[in-house]
Length: 354
Image (cartoon, rainbow, N blue to C red; front, side, top):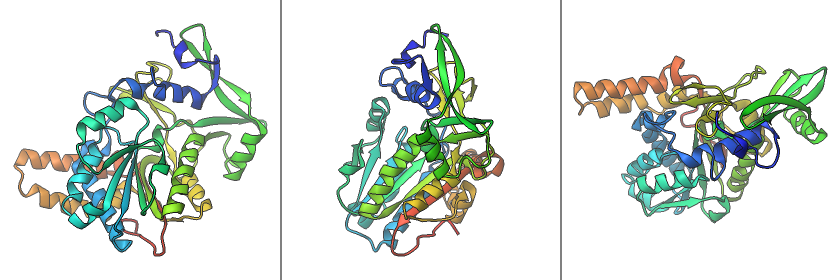
């Protein structure tokens, strides 16, 4: 392993979330700053890359929301962590088929990586797109935030309870290449925060998405100010089991977290009940959490696939339905991926969730 001093710039002992943040997002050495992680030649593949049908369905859901809001003259769509720009590319293609909607909407891409921003700019040519680092750039009109595999890529804190005392997980650099994990007593402020979300009651091992909730705070504040909502699809869980869910992927295979630092992806499973709890605290109306399979089927993805496939040859048709199977099959992505939405609206918007 090459020297990894650069991921410990100020201290040789840092909390696990700080280490992951450095490994993924450091401007010079971070994973997302150096390479294109998506697709066959990358390290992982996301739903928009698996099938254009995924993004088409999402586009139709967004248009239905706009109609539910009585077709406002100004409507903002924000994609959180747009990756390669594949999803936005399909969204725009569909939006253009609905001229009244297209005229009213603007797309904002929330991207922190300069490397990925350049990739998106190469892949997306549309006068309606704006890149932002702050949501305050959106001044008026209702807003819908869309996130596909956004929260799983944000660093999490980890804690262990030993004899009723809470310890936080740190990583320590020994020499120039060896990383070990250690636990340090958690401070009282952290304990108060975890108690607020009832995270200390049952489990002896706890994960807490501090950065994720900070992002969610900015998102919900914008929704409350402008009206609108939030829609998230990610892989995660409903029932807390007190497990370490941090994982690393390289070349579409599992990788040890402390191997290939800066050259491999690191993610964690999203705690959907915690997100729901947070969104309710922020006084938003939260729909029931459903699986990706449930949402896509309710939105008519199978019917859409059958229509699209009518103009395809046998090979193209087989490919289309194999990709669809990957999105929907419970043992693949269908059940593991969950969907949550929350709104500040006068009337409930339940499309795809009942």
